[in-house]
Amino acid sequence: MTRTRLGLCALFALSIAVAAPVPKDAKKENPFPYTVGTKWEYIHDGDEKKVWVEEVTECEEKDGAITFKVDITPDEGEKRFEVYRLKDGELVITATQDGKFDPPMLIAKAGMKAGDEWKSKWTLKAECLTVEAETTLTVGKAEEITTPAGKFTATPVTRTGEGEEKVVFWFADGAGMIRQTTDGVKEPA
Image (cartoon, rainbow, N blue to C red):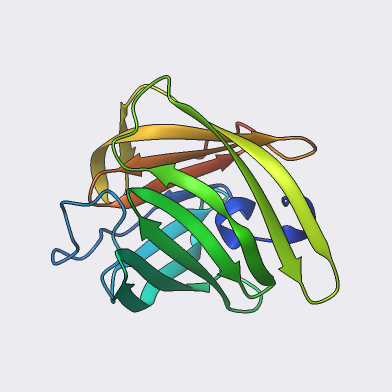
C-alpha cells in the first residue's frame, strides 16, 4: 500500500478497519458522530498489533455549523489532527496539522444513497506549498460490514481524483467511518 499524495490527511492515508465501538452517548441521529470523547480504533494494514486511534477532543456549535477536532495517534509516527465541519448535512475537512483547506474538502453527506455523486474542489494551504485538487465522491449500495466492533450496515463512498489513489470509506449511521481501503485493497475485518 502506498501513502496518498504528500501524506496530507491521515484519514486518507491508510487501509483501516474499526476495532472499537463508538461510545453509547454519541449522537445517533447523525451519521457522523462528533461528541467529545467519541473514539475509534482502527486496525492498520490488517495487523491487529498496529492500532490507529482517533478521538474527538473538541466540539463547537455556532451559526448552524458543528466544528470538531479529531486527534489522531497513529500506530507509528507523530500524533496528528484533523478539523471537520458539519453543516446542512455536509461533512467537510477544514484543516490538518499540515495546513488549512480553503475551500474545504467534502467527505460525505447525510442521507446519501447509492448512485449519488458529487465533485469537490478544494485547496490545502500549507506552510510551504498550496495544493489544489478536484475529487469525485460516488456512493455505492449499502452493505453489511463485519468488524471487530461488530456488524454494521454501511454505505461505501469512493473518492477518486486526478493523480490520487482510489479510496473507499464505509459510513454507518451513528458510528461514522467504520472501514477505509486505499487502492481497492480490502483489509480483513
